[in-house]
Length: 101
Image (cartoon, rainbow, N blue to C red; front, side):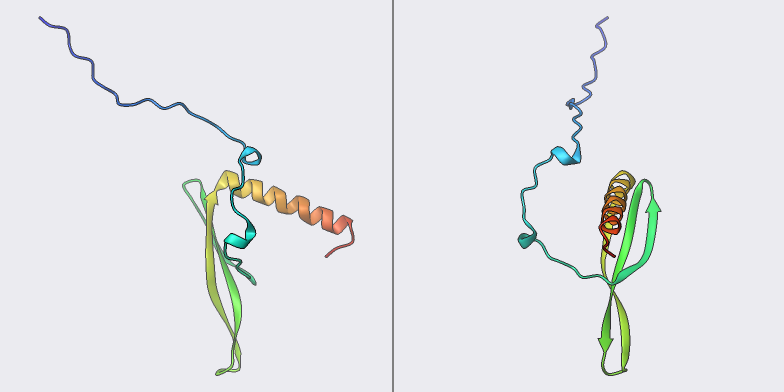
C-alpha cells in the first residue's frame, strides 16, 4: 500500500520584530491632516485594542451656545497605547520641570 501523501501546509513565513524607533518615518507633518481636539469623550478596550474618541467644541450662534462634535477616533493596540502614554508622561514631566504648564 502506498504511503499517505503529506498535506501541504501552505507557505511558511519568518516572523520579524521591529522596534518602533527603528522604523523610518517616510512622511512629514505637512502631508497629513492636523486635527485640533478639545478633549476626549470616551474610551473602549476590546481584544487587546484601545479606542479613544476625541471631540471639538464649536460655537452654535443660532442657539447662542456651544455644541460638542466627535472629530476622530484613534485605535491602537494596548502595547502602542502604553508606549504613547509613557511618551506623554515623560513630556509632561519635562515641561513641568522646565516651568511649563
